[in-house]
Figure (cartoon, rainbow over the protein chains, first blue to last red):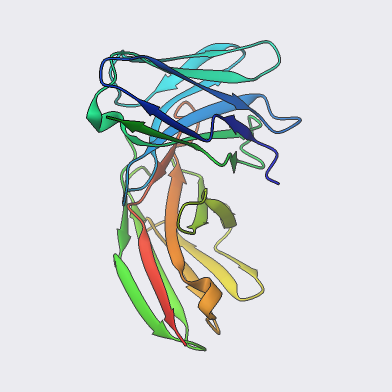
Amino acid sequence: DAGVTQSPTHLIKTRGQQVTLRCSPKSGHDTVSWYQQALGQGPQFIFQYYEEEERQRGNFPDRFSGHQFPNYSSELNVNALLLGDSALYLCASSSQSLNGYTFGSGTRLTVV
Amino acid sequence: GENVEQHPSTLSVQEGDSAVIKCTYSDSASNYFPWYKQELGKRPQLIIDIRSNVGEKKDQRIAVTLNKTAKHFSLHITETQPEDSAVYFCAAFGGYGNNRLAFGKGNQVVVIP
């Protein structure tokens, strides 16, 4: 058990819909990063949250937004879903020194 | 931003032989280099990492070397076993002010029994 939990594990949505994915970091971690992993590709950085603020953002459109709560858990929201948003969405938690950078099991999103 | 390239894309080795995967990075400020193993349908699992103040690190059959001058780092797996078959990703952390891991595209390692 990696200690980082993500929900749901699988999700099927229709184009144009909106989706919310959730992540609870490992105990003791205060930083949450979100990645998108398309089939056959490496994970691509979406954004990172620390102290309830987005610290840095990758090359993703504004349709991708997030939030971090006082308990360090985080949500990833995607609006106006496209077929190309189908991917494994990974959450990783860490401390500020990057010790213990750990991935959750991911949420497999399929857009039809 | 940081750009990580990984070679080769696919590697087949006989069981018991060694496997080496090489990665290059572009940002000289990067200071943390983890390697992940991902089995089909599962999350990436950290197998070893190295920081920029160290040139080599070993953990049983796995070792990582880092050449900061040339900006490349390598994963070495010795005495390969069938369970080593997986996709391996290298990554680089961009350093202060760049709080993200940049991943390579992955390397499919196949260990032939």
